[in-house]
Length: 274
Image 1: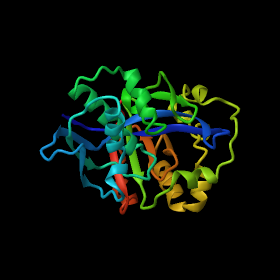
Image 2 (image 1 turned 120 degrees about the horizontal axis):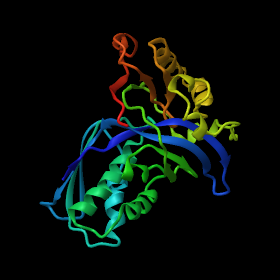
Image 3 (image 1 turned 120 degrees about the vertical axis):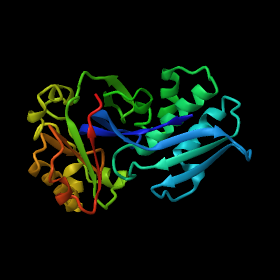
Image 4 (image 1 turned 90 degrees about the horizontal axis):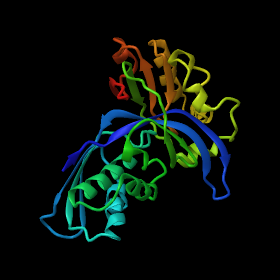
């Protein structure tokens, strides 16, 4: 079975408060983007359990710690899963605030359920996904969602960007999530994100904010420049996604001068999904 795990962006991100467990309560809208990895699962020819084969963007570290392998191990505790070979081709940049690893893990859970006919509902898979990452459960349903808590409490939100185009740029820097949180002062906004998101897109600028931006932009001005360049090219709205370092812009159409601005950066363009 072959699936194409997609990225997400954050439409607004408010850091509300620090919790007793050390995490933070947030408020954000997760929105799917068509930038995808490729994930294939086939019966193993060498035995073992979950044999991961990687291509595309280089991923360092222990393969056993990859979220795709952890997703397999999580279900293997309850079900007798046969050994599989997993082929993961990485296109979604990591350290970018795009949820690529979480998306891979969610699609792994979906493939294992469907391939081996496991008696699991989407709600069941969401609960498993939440054990792998705060935003992982979003990718099980993969529709625009208003997220609360640490990003794991979600409800559908009636928003559509259909008919608009998106430009997504990741400069050649990475921002770790702990580093991003260290620079944030939690606050309760005067207007809720769910109210702002109902406004026309042209009215989002200055209202729909990402609380990570001030401290991240101060440390990495090249990320701030990407956002400024988006507006120079005519973006209706632009923002950093998650804790960075990627920045997206929403346009009525893809700007012709795009290649003049982002020569050495990762760039994705496409139509908005919903």
